[in-house]
Length: 258
Image (tube, rainbow, N blue to C red; front, side):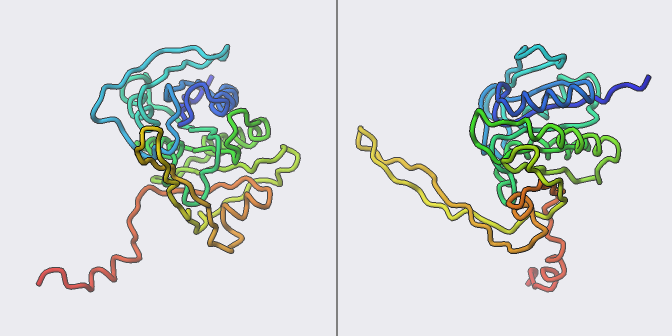
């Protein structure tokens, strides 16, 4: 009998978040599951790693599933690093991160702890997927995502991913029967129009809240934003080589050495 694939599960919302519990449930139908996730929410941490303090790992049991679980005091990227180096007894066949409470489409991928965990595994040469649902509510309903999560995961295990690529998967906030299907997309050109809400504390000190509005600048119908707005699951292949290859020729024509 073939050995079941070893699947590393992590997230950025914390090990008790409903999104990761839904993801674990699906992964338990596919392979042998080990969970290493933050012990508290780490949203917006990007690819931060812990350098100036110690990391703590605790074996925990959150539900009655067959998975092995560890909570980690560090960031999502820390969870993957320490999991591969210290916890797992063999190299995982797959890493899945999420299911995130909230969008990681378009430029949001830059800030995402969910995607940074998947990218960290990708850097280690492990096929990886980040999953997100466009619903920030802690009690979001993840039921509609499960069938597609399973299908996408099985495809990655069967077909593999190109070296240097991870998948960024986002789900629209829709009932399962209203999801039209899956579209492979490019990342939409978009940004945040941000501002800081300045306030005064009771002690008379100034403090700020970051606020902003997400603005889609892309009219293309091949983007993740278009897919999500039109009822599709978006799948964007993300590369972590950030080199702007098209600019190398131009820069080589500059005179840097006089």
